[in-house]
Image (cartoon, rainbow, N blue to C red; front, side, top):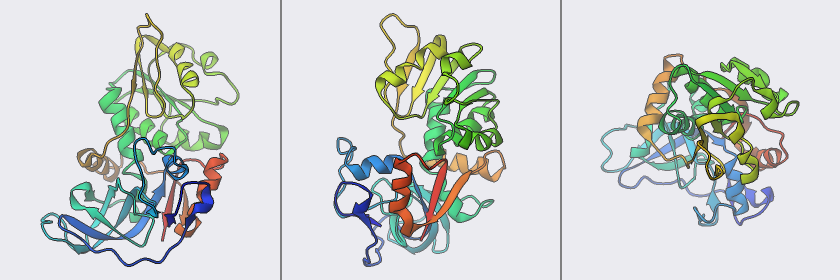
Length: 304
């Protein structure tokens, strides 16, 4: 599934192209699934060109789960038949086959369907970095996950709970059951109650996963205790002069050590992979349209 120009979802279409060949340090993966990420909409519309310029036509799909079918030279760690997952920063996984650098892949979880594991590399590692690298969550803290109903939010709730935090989560009624099932201690319906009125006391940290304006993000600051923290994976949050609240904005990086640690938690039964929907890859353009109109929730995987 390739985009031939920047624009609306109609620029995505299915093309027949030659099967890729593994170069040195690479493998070819038979794709079990890729997944949809909200950032894919910005990429397709050309909003991310300041940080990433796609060579058109561009095959979408930034994360993959699948089986190795060809191994290139200088790859001592993988064999044909190995089930793997990973983030592919140059895209390409929205296809039947994709090449990937072996160093960006880890063994797939064994306790969930291989296709479902395509939900993990981007959303799961982003959540890991938010919780452990930036928020540095410890037991006993009160953590508010803003945007808990999305794919990253589900992992963020579980990792914060794994660290021993008390987790509050914003979610619409559509997402509330899933957020509760993933372990949130309190759920705030942001459509019914302003956040500033919903909290009995300030939290230690807000993890912001909601895209919006800097002004909207700034409304999170009063929710945090003095000397507390806001960690945002979307827009920067800028505390006013004199504020004791610290704000961190980050862009998740590819980290296979963290991905492997997350796989271990999944196989140990400590983290669930919550799949909102499984869709045929041919419906990718329609998934983009639904996401832009606010009709999607959680993690959607796409199977060839």
